Image (cartoon, rainbow, N blue to C red; front, side, top):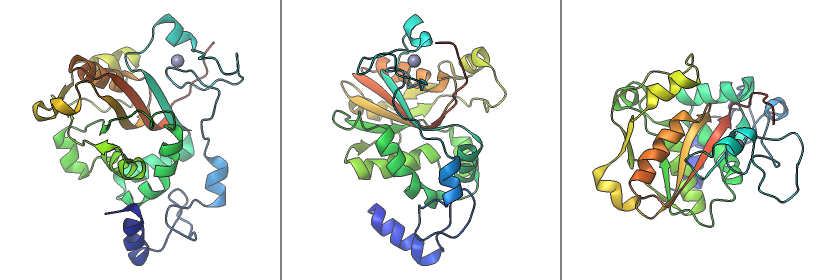
Length: 246
Ligand SMILES: [Zn+2]
């Protein structure tokens, strides 16, 4: 089903509303003026590797790295995010996750498309960070899977929803610090044996909702690279941007 058809079907049953404030808007996927004002889109300059935004450009056109990536490059090749994680994007993601507001994926696709603009020329496969099946049953859908599927149609890159699997349930990470998060997700992911051919030698775009410390996408990357992935490009809707010394 094309996005346009999906949008048509949604518009025919639900009046279009802003995904954040709930105000009526002209068409599905549009935001109210207030929501636009409060969302913070991440734009250049940012760290070439992890996508951490810089306040000013250090050397125009160069592949600048943040202090963290200079000390140790992440396992993944690049990470990019559409939005800064703030109160507005948090509300958007929480509504998307738990409020059955799946139609808002229509609004998110252009943002993800733009944030991942560097990827589309070379990407072979789009894969979501998986939920464990127990959590999937409770939630009924994987929001990263919905974003990945809609994005795949937009960019014409193959979508493999079940390439990565969780080997064991992990805790919700909200209150864990960086080292606890690392332990929580260590060896949590594996490649589905039937999907090894979609990983070996491929350039993979890994989609998730929020980049916090990067521990989850790093563990996914470990599994993908051990199975022979050529490159792993991370793409998230939002990322936590805590002030840090450059
Ligand atoms: Zn970095």
